Length: 345
Image (cartoon, rainbow, N blue to C red; front, side, top):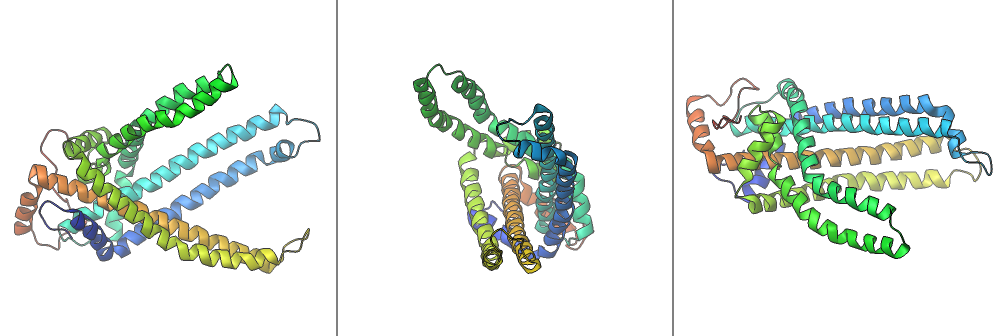
């Protein structure tokens, strides 16, 4: 899939596409399995929450004229909204972590020319998903800490501003503060951007993954930043191209249905069917685009991990020696590129 030497930008992009082209069935199968688990789980959480607080919707959103909603109705809705947000975040993070674990796992076999199976990669992805989720959460927490710190200081100052002029001055100050915090957040994000690949390919824990990522990126930040930005923009453009036809078809299917609904009347069964069809098209296109964007970005990150290992730790020579002594077709799920013997993995 990639030349066993230090990789240029073209090698990383073409290697990512080659991995997708050579293993698209397995990639698509695992990603569809993830969606088949995550989406119903999210729908179930929302459905249970709505059913639990359904009786509070009308008193809050349609109270008697001139009256404010009572706290006994507002509090359950707020609590339910917080619980739903937390549960949806956890479910979404775990689903994304399975996909993030899948890409390095499939690259580990592709680099060695080994065959892959849905069962082996599904097992590997699910097994490493909690560690990948931990690495993603910690890296996001660390990278977002400068922005969170600024907002934690800025918001109380705005709320306690003594005059309108002070509040306006603080509002004008926020973009300048963000100009300071955003570069630091980007620097931290790139510094820990290889943690997912480390966690999967070396079997490391989240903290070790962050440390290894920082060590591999050190001294080569600008090159990795440039390669990552190109991969992210390319993935975003292709994801947009994937969902565009679904959005167009869904929009064109929705317009006649909306026009056919009589004013003040109930929509017909045909109009409801058309609206559901249009919504499903738009939703499916958006999900397909997001999955491709996440998958391609994670593949490019895994390529950068392999590249840094070849540049700094002689991984290419180790792989060539292993290829010389191991048949190409071995058991799926066998060990991939050897981990570094630096005491951290």
